[in-house]
Every structure is written in C-alpha cells, then in structure tokens.
Image 1: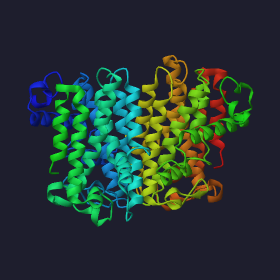
Image 2: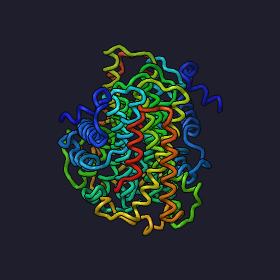
Image 3: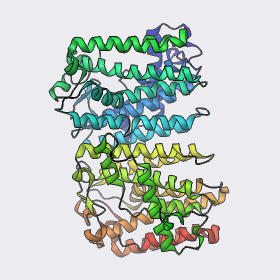
Image 4: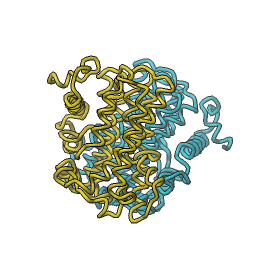
Length: 307
Length: 307
C-alpha cells in the first residue's frame, strides 16, 4: 500500500491538502474493496470476476469520502472507516448494476465502461447485484466496529431497503411520464439517493465516539441536505455534461421522461436550488467548527463536480 | 393470534404432536412475516404489496421449522426463533423471486400462483427481491437476539452470498447442458440449497445457550446432510410429482437440461441416495437424545414430503 493510502487515517491526515486527502481515501477504498471482494479465481469464478468488474477501478467514492470526513467529527479510526465506507460503497455498486439492467434503465455505459450485463450477461449481473448487497452486510458484521455495530447494520439496511434506496427506485419507476411536484420529487430523491448518502455520513460518525444529541441532529440535517444536493447536481449534469465526461449515458432522464429538478425548476432554477442547499448544508456544520473542514470541502466538491 | 400460534414457543410446545407443532410454527412464521413486512399501504405501496405477495400466504416454511427445531437443543425462546426463522425465510423468498425472473429460470408459477414478475412486472420483481434481502438483515439486526447476534448476521450473509446460495445459483447457470459428476453436483447444491438450510439450523441453535464444540460440530454435520437431502428429494419430486401438487412447474430441470441427482443416478439411485442421507443425518443427531425429536421428525418430513 502506498504512503498516500496509509496517510488517510484520521490520525495522520490532518495536514494533507483536501485534494491529496481525497485521493488517499479513494486509494484506500479501492485497496479495501479489492481485499474484501472474493478473489476472481474463487469458485464460482465468473461471478467473482463480474463482482470485481462492477466494483473496482472506477467511481468517485463519494460515500466512503463522506464516511471518512464524518469520522473526523468523532475521532474514528481509519481501520473502522474503511469498513463502513466500503459497506456503503458495495450497496451503491449493487444498486448501479441492477439499475442498469434491461428491465430497469437498460443502460450500456457506466463509469466509462460497458455495464455489467453487457460485459458479462444478464443473469450474472442479477447475481452480481444480489451478492454485492449480501457482501455489504457481511463486511459490516465481520470487522470489529465497536459497541454500536448492530445499530450500524440496522442503519445501512434501513437506508438500502424498500423504505430507503430501493423504495426510491420504485417511486422513480412509477413516475416515468408523470409530473411530480417538488415535495413528491424530494421524497423520491430523499429515498433513492439521499438515504444512502445520509447513511454514509452517519455510519462514519458511528465509527467513533458518541456525539451529543444536538450534534447528532445537526449532522443528520447536514446529511439530508448533502444527499439532496448531490441529486440536484446529478440532474443538472445529466442535461449539461457529455456522455464522455460523465462516463455514463448523458441526457437519459429527459429521454426517459423522468421528472428531474431541471424539468421542474428549469436549469437556472435548479442551479439556484443547489446553491441554497449548499448554504443550508454548510450552516448545519457550523456547530462542529474546524473539525468539519473535510465535510465542508466535500460539500463544495459535490456542488462543483463536473461528472 | 390463535392458541396454536402461541403454543409453538419452546416453553409450551413440548406436548404437541409433531403435525400440530408444525402447523403452529408455520402459523407463527406467517404472523411474524406479516408483522415484519412493511404494510401494503406504506409508500411505495405497489412495491410493498408485491413484497407481501411474494412472501405471505404460502410456502412450507421448512427453514423456520428447522430453526425452531434446532432451538430446542439450546433452550432458545420462541421470540428469538421467530426472528431468526423469518430472516432466513425472507432470504429464501427473495431468491425465489429472482430465480423466477425471465433472465433466470423464466417461470410463471410458484406456490400455486403466478410468479411475482407475472403478477406485477419485471422491474418491480427485481426490487422485491432486492428489498426482501435487505429486510432479512434489518430484521436480524433489529431484535434483541443475545450475545451472538453479530455472528448470526455474519452467518446468514455468508450463507446467502457469492460463496453460498447466490454462488450455487451461478454454478447452476453455468451447468445447463453440461454433465457434472457427483462431487461437482454436490458442491452446486451444497451452495444453492444447502447453505441456507444449514444457516436455518445453526441460527436456531444460536438463539439459545452455547453448545459444546462437539455438539455444535454434530449439529453442523446434520445440517449439511439435511440440506443435501432436501435437494435430492427436490430433484426426485421435480420428475415424479405433478405441477398441481408442487405448485410450481414440474419437469423443468429435465426440460432445461439441468444436471440433477435423477439425471446422474437414475430415479432409483436418487431414492437410495436420499435414504442414505436420511440415515446419516439422523446419526448426527444421536448425541442430542430426546431433545432432537423435532429435528428427527422434520428429517422424515423432508424425506417423505410430496411437494
């Protein structure tokens, strides 16, 4: 493991400039995922190869970054944060594989490469998603994450299931061709994208010392706003960035007649909404002072990202 | 809840004849699943209706029965056993929904009713399976199941994932049209069916007092043999029972050119193999004496079942 990878532990990373810290967490996430996934020669080899294909080598790792940044508020160790971050990332990876399937979004490009069912086949991609979800819970239950580990399993499960991410996907399916108002759109995204973003933040914090109730509530407010912000920016990028930049098919929301913040508010309105969410998210962090500087920088990264 | 349902607690059920005990556990499982699944009016309602459709109202509940029977060896309470049994049953229900999808076995009949993707639609069925899996882990992490609860989450995850049930399904996919020898067929079934049967037994035992190492090893031997026995009998029924009796399409293994114990050993050979597995499974229980009588009766039920 390179020095950059080791340096992202919260003990040693205080002096790293943000871009270096980000690269270090991304590298550590990649190395941890490579270690947690079954080796590609393990039987059934084709399934394990496809699981690694769908998870490794690409991705911004926004959720592990949020977990590491939130862990700085509670003095969490990097050894715990890498597990919590990778568990969330495995859930995210499973959801992408299933969302891309022909019966869902029927997409052929993801992270600049053919989607899993294109590179392998449809039944394998189904099992890849199923197995990545299972691995997320196995990983989270296997390491020693301290006294609140069962609460972490519950939190990740609730955020991922029918009252969280998968539920948001179901609302999204039902909304194709429909006009949603802003509260309906916010509920859909609060579940589809927001629930897992929030889980990443709260799991990171749970890896360290308990927060006071007030601070925990403030962090939760931040996490909800950051989750919504992430989705609004996603909607903006879907209609302003190119397929080459995004590494996934651009413009597909409009093509699929999906309601988005851009279709609801217009491009300028969506940008203003993103700005106000950014301000609200940063306001929620005020209580943490200097300890929140990684979360503050990440909020700006999420707002201004180009892909 | 009826008296029959309450009577299956290990404290009160000692005197029930086996068929009554079985009905009581099945009724308790149904009631617990109905309580654990989100109500069908909860948003997203269609997804929750479909999750309940795929899980409730049918099924032999073999895995919860095994959990309850194994719990008698360790003095586990019914309150814990119903959670452990339902967590395994939720994993089983998810696997059936995904296995029936067009890209997998493409089946239209399950438990005497249209499969989930036929009754609803394919993307909903995909999300139903995904959400039932998540719910299994949420349920197992939410209740108070004692000191070894994290070990239970790990055990269920390992049994369900790419080195367990989903891995067996991947081997099964790759084996269509192939000739497997008996060790290869046993590995496939040890994963595809056996891993979850074994998990049901071991989770039931883990709900109570710790077993001595010798007794735990004996129970594990039993669980492995019972899992294989269940699959051999399944293969026999697939080619001897009618679709009406099975509640699922009969004869589909042969139609799909899937290797089975019947195609490998012939019908008579498969029956002899089932008999020898039954004897081995019962031998493994000898160490438990009278406390294993529910497991013994269940082994006979698995061997002689007609559907």
